[in-house]
Image 1 (cartoon, rainbow, N blue to C red):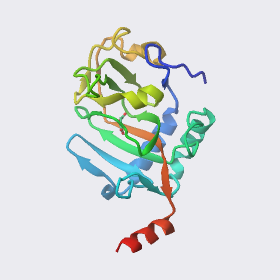
Image 2 (image 1 turned 30 degrees about the vertical axis):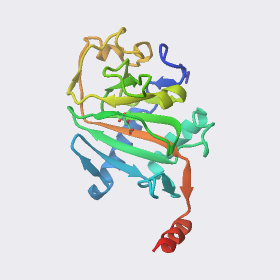
Image 3 (image 1 turned 120 degrees about the vertical axis):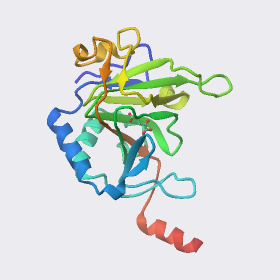
Image 4 (image 1 turned 60 degrees about the vertical axis):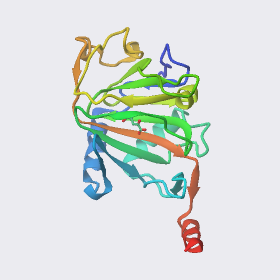
Length: 233
Ligand SMILES: O=C(O)CCC(=O)C(=O)O
């Protein structure tokens, strides 16, 4: 598998179409559908679920050490083989945020914050989407319009790290159809696997599940966390 950085972006963003197969995509979606409904947090414009769990501690930056579920093992092994996480403290992702978006749903522009090592690997399942990248001005505020648009095909992997992780914001517009899809407007156009699906310039979204895999820097053993809780009570 050749890994090309996205031209026209700082050398800190990688796109790989067909990172997983259609069979793997279906298996992972089925496993996610089997998770109890009570694990999902319903937000107004998407729902989300954290595995192995949500971060704890007063700064919400600590992961209680628990393995990721086995249905993600081959994906995690592939990320390790590709050495994307070699510079992160645990050399592999230890946390995954699962977001589900219906057509018309999205996520406000945001930064991923300091709880994680500065590398994010996102796998898209079930639908494409367009991720919008915003620069910050000299005051550190988000510029009003996105400066880059990245088309993420189903089964693709997007890795962001370095400058891109530290100095930009990213979001997904709450729209049901992505428009203005072409070589000039989409920075990873030349890296798409199935360009013909988008060549009309518009693509309707389906329900998309994204897996955002990251390495949480602080990890606590359950025994240690219990002692900490007891000491405070
Ligand atoms: O769903 C996506 O691709 C983006 C998710 C995201 O930005 C996040 O989990 O912080």
